[in-house]
Amino acid sequence: MSVLLWLVLVTAPRAPAAQAVLITTPRGETSVPVTTERGSAAVAAPRLGPPLGLTVALDGSRVTVGLSGVVFVFQLGAPFVRAGGVVYGLVGEPYVARDTVFLPLHWLADCVPRAVGGRYRWEPAPGGDTGRLVELPIASAVTATPPSTPSTAPVLPPSPASAPNPITGLRQRHGVVIDPGHGGVDPGNPGRYFPSGLVEKDITLAIGRLLRAELTRRAIVATLTRSTDTLIDLTDRGALCKAACDLFVSIHVNAMPDGRRADRVSGVETYFLSDAKTEDQQRVAQMENEAISFETGTSSAATGPLGFILRDLQVNEYLRESAQLAQLVQDSAARIHPGGDRGVQQAGFTVLTTARRPAILVETGFATNRTDGAFLASSLGQHKIASAIADGIVAYLLELERKRAVAAPARGR
Ligand SMILES: [Zn+2]
Image (cartoon, rainbow, N blue to C red; front, top):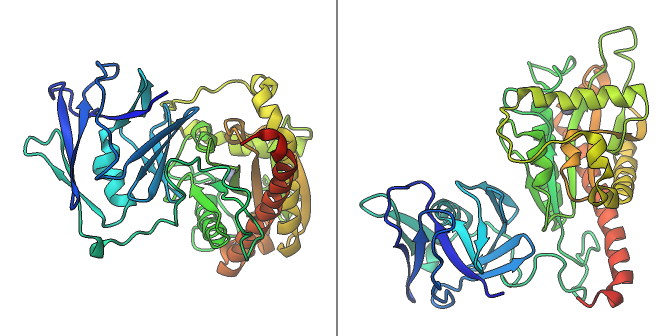
């Protein structure tokens, strides 16, 4: 299959069918055709090699586009693009028709200038419908992205011959999606022992950001499902972990219901997806799944009953991996936690059902316990828990690489 690139203009239905975006670089100009609607006639797009150095590769549902050394990873049908560990929302979704990849024009106009920091400027055309992308002189470039693999190569798995990372011992590139629980209109639990009105969503975001920093320091590509105080549908969170993602980790803070025991329960526990076995596991799953009541109902991902999803072989394939990941993260987190080790648990979390990779949910402690609450609200505590989760993830990835190395001779890749 030959892969060509078109851009789809989704915001201006009045634009005529045959338009083009001009990409201007010091080495010359190239023109990318723009189509105005899905399924319009696909004419052979021009070769987009020099002068732009733009490459397109399609692998299953993943589209990898290289531009100026930055790798953009799209998923067909998903309004997101990932570049350098950051997920950008898109107006419109990439799709394939007649051997041609269609990308939203929004990507070129908005994401490229942001992702390739300072290298490009988008200049809208006088009519406002299209425009041109101008490459700026190299001296002004400030690229915040990590060194990229050749853009036509798959992001995962990379060459097994690469030298181990001096910090982690990992030899391959890995991607992790971090999900700070709740957000926006969904505060999570009210955080009885958090200071100054902090609630669960604030703590999960703080720990999520620190975890991203800890993983980045360990040369792991880490992406947040939310980096601000916004609400993302539970079913969309896990879906962000697909091709270039090894695992999904959701961060939460536990809370006991009001009662005599409420203050006394403390500690960290790590869940992986399964049917909840005990009353306590059911309570936690129900509490975290309640975020659905805040959602707008516009989620593109289909929700189904847990029983159905659990029968899905694709999920079952990751159950054992998820259990191992949960154990390694739990062991690491329990070592530094003042509230004690509550072990690995199983429950039916909606946020975990849509991940097509090993997925866990860490309840980092109890906001209803004074010691846990103070620990989780402190900068030191947040750093400790983020670092411990990162160590657990590295331990899992080392195991994963070991298993891949054993399987490699038969894989022919
Ligand atoms: Zn929560």
